[in-house]
Image 1 (cartoon, rainbow, N blue to C red):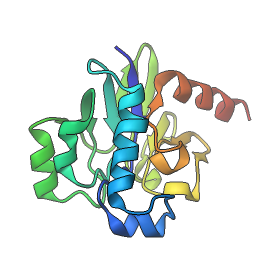
Image 2 (cartoon, helix red, strand yellow; image 1 turned 60 degrees about the horizontal axis):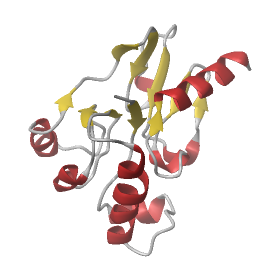
Image 3 (tube, helix red, strand yellow; image 1 turned 180 degrees about the horizontal axis):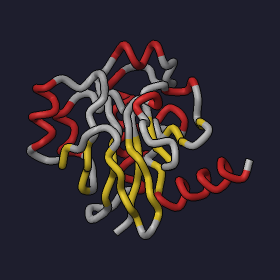
Image 4 (tube, rainbow, N blue to C red; image 1 turned 30 degrees about the horizontal axis):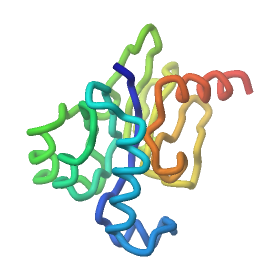
Length: 163
């Protein structure tokens, strides 16, 4: 079982396609690419994916591999969260996880991180900033629309801490 992190898929959101200048002709091409070429190419059925908000079209969750643990973002309505809860575990901002001795604080917006000692993972700001002093943007717009593996997150964490 591998562990992955992602955010801001915004499946079927025309507004995000335009505002984030995603390189797709329409939302159908975007959805297909993110699901088939990015997510399901790296995530296996028994893997775990922490999705840190702004999922988009919740009906597409059935097309994604892996167990999804979901932290709602600002675009995720109560109805969307309820629908996702049938397939995903729902967690709150500032959830702390320990993955093989590596502690991560999970938030949607970087400003939600309340404990400065922890390395935090976030989304929300798309390509406006990939790293913070003690955090990493795991959103799809920063990582070729692909969930980041734990190993990739650890690589970035070490570089951020070093410099």
